[in-house]
Length: 113
Image 1 (cartoon, rainbow, N blue to C red):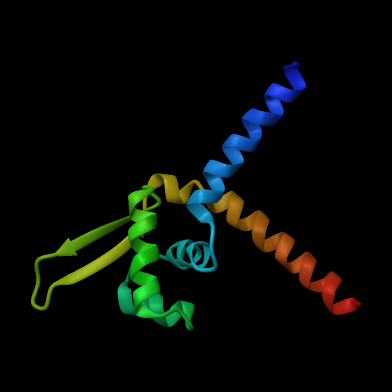
Image 2 (cartoon, helix red, strand yellow):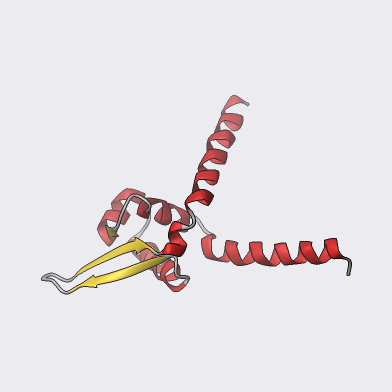
């Protein structure tokens, strides 16, 4: 295998790893919502809109497992749970900005045709 092929294979593997973490309809919107500050479950559901409680719960667990978000349990009455971005989650800001910029460009291209 030549050097270009090895580099290509390595980049493909890295991109698959990254996509595994952010894949799907809901993970990036959850991360984006948390860039505006810590949120409780209901706040996330209201911000995102059309996500079911079951799907939100599943996606939060996956993001927590991948160390993108953290779940903090407060010992209050009633018990309060808050979600926030980890340093790894915060490191996605540039990626989110790029996706949003591309999304604006994409929408303009599609709407003009």
